[in-house]
Length: 516
Image: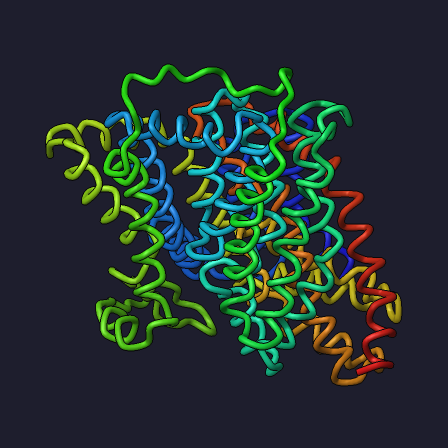
């Protein structure tokens, strides 16, 4: 079993060495990881070549649709806003909320980014958030990192709570219970993350000067509504409620208690004309439409969702045991809704078809390395999942830790999101194992639900170091070859947070089991 464990671990070990030690670009590191996965799956886990190849093909297909489609749509939306000068109007309007970069970071990366993540997921928040921060003068690498930090806390609420809803279904626990437990486990991260974002941006604790109340407003403004909504309205609305309340409270705080520090002043934007209501509406129209379309087509509006969900195609790809159909959902998918919003807004803002095609062409050309990264990392995840490599890693960990397993359970959830870039997929891979492990060590039903939720909380921490998330951020701001630099920083954040999460889950399991 030890030999199988290390064979299963080989692609992950390679990724860590390649990205941090060798400082290879993500697209190269992930392509080699796929080769490692092929070799290990066939030679150590007895997976036939045909099954290995079709597992990789299914992963590549998943990367193209919906993930790459979301990335193209999100970055095209931003680039088109740059072309139409809408982004300049947005910058001026943000200056009217606050001229302090730190407030705008909280507003865009934490509040607005949280809303995008909770509504659509798939990297939208990192792509659009980082692009917007760069547009107001934030250093590109800092913009990526603060968006990754914010997104990590909120990723289990993505796509109207899809990771939590899926986890609840797979483990047969109530969705509200899973949402509440996940939020409680993440509560310290939710409170501390706005502080960490600003310290990271400013490079020292000095960046918190005058900002402690604002950070508390942002963190608690997300946490409290998320707990209440998750407990009373279900997993689907927990994150959405948190993001909307947090955004509103940040704006209200900035207006009531203006923060002004020359060191963090937003570079002056020369206004060529007065911003009328019509001009502001046109500038924000892409993001307003994204909001409206995501809400109207979501499961919050069942008649529309049910009708549009019919437009899908299911085909067989994987040929091995446990094979199913892969479904392409054509309309009710974030990429399609975001692209539709961008096109409608482009016409309203005066762009021609030729203009939009030109912007789209430039967007796609700059994203080719990202496409390779996405395709190879998700293909790797599929090969590892179908071959039994991921299950082997989890089972050995359970056997080795015994009653200390709750302290390790977030790490397993983090491994899932690190490999796949998805909190949902992490739950699919490990959610049931977490609940079964809790049962094996004698936890009652509440303790089992707590442990299942630990997978979602751990998956959030894992998103900090996910190569997929890093690649999306790098592509969004037009950088290349900086993935290893970002990963090196992300690891330093990941380690203390995953240790802290382990302690919260370990001690919390006994506490919730005793009082509930």
